[in-house]
Image 1 (spheres, one colour):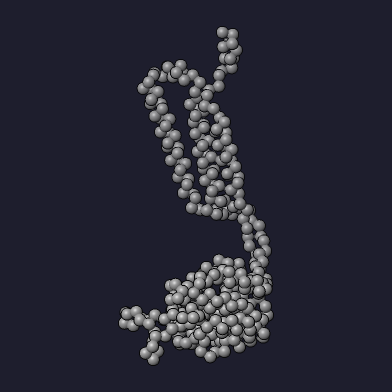
Image 2 (image 1 turned 90 degrees about the horizontal axis):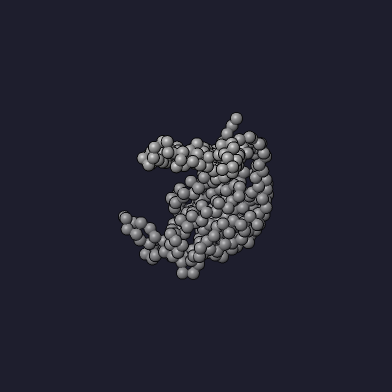
Length: 346
């Protein structure tokens, strides 16, 4: 019979049973030595006429067996299979993450890019079976992770993202949207969304037109998250010969500002929503809830699973019954038959 245990690590608690048995054995031995030192064997019956050593040992055995049963219950034993059909509903979500050097600006801590990666990692806990993919972009766009339900693989791809994840500098948001739209596994409309995470600075890649085409022709809703200060902006730190400096162009320091207008137009034309996080704390879990509310989920796949029935309650119940018996059981010796009548007659 196939048996599974939900918490195998709890088997180590069984070491407590022999340890407790040794404690009981030591206690009985010490009690015996103390009695022998106090009186001879002939006086034991007179000193403790109502105490049964055998009953005391039986009570100790009950505690030991009960402890063993409770440990087995804690391991979560399961047996007896049931085959069930598991249906999974969700949406397909392609994330387009800006990895241009402007995302190194530190108006979000530790910087825009690292903060986006942290928030995307947290969002995985709320996906509820959605398939998710990742496109990185700067001067060109690259598919870093195709649509997958394997969130572990997605997280590994996300951890590897840096400003060197694409071969060219710049910021072509439209190219990223077009690549993401072409990366879905089917042509059916609906149940699809693109989430663009960027500071909004685009170099004439026509992102608004790309969002409009994705929504009207393919039924893909486009959502945008704007990171960065839209007013003053922030400088872009760079390393030069081990020295921390700031990016310059024409002898002047470059200040990166979040282009909110472009992102809002993309969301409007793409049938989605714009989340202008700017320099406040972004909440990608809340953003995902909004996306889920606007994008209709569908049945993505179904599978058959073998489920084992939990049986821990049998062992837990038996252990508790033994403990109850031990509590109710007295260690007093039963008087011999007729002893009570003789005492009354006397």
